[in-house]
Image 1 (cartoon, one colour):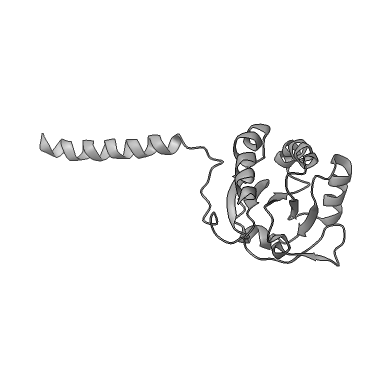
Image 2 (cartoon, helix red, strand yellow):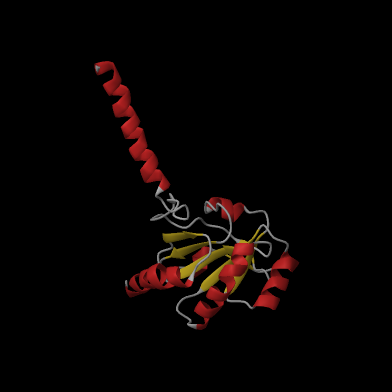
Length: 175
């Protein structure tokens, strides 16, 4: 009888872990970058490749970094939400055209509208790699000191914007 108890206990423990794991939201993958300085980079501006952008330029301001691409279907779903949000002028939004051809990124923004204050090109994906991008779209809230405070995997939705991003942004801007 005792020899069956240990396997039963192990089975129950594994079952609890499996149950908890299945209940998690797959879009909420913990990022090791939360609470750490945003990775530094210097990338060309999409419309003016001779000019460079660096996150250092945003020190002193709360801002959003949104990784997207012209070939990304989920980015197209997110785009109207970003367009509406940009009209509120709550904070600067920096777009990163990720692993994309410059001309395709420009054509997409000309057709759909440009919600970004600055758009940069990450053609080889190095900055995306440094930020731990799993796939586009991904959005980061970065505080006045250049620290990543939130990472959204997948498209920003009106609900996520209302319930998570806006309260966080307000809190960070008040500091």
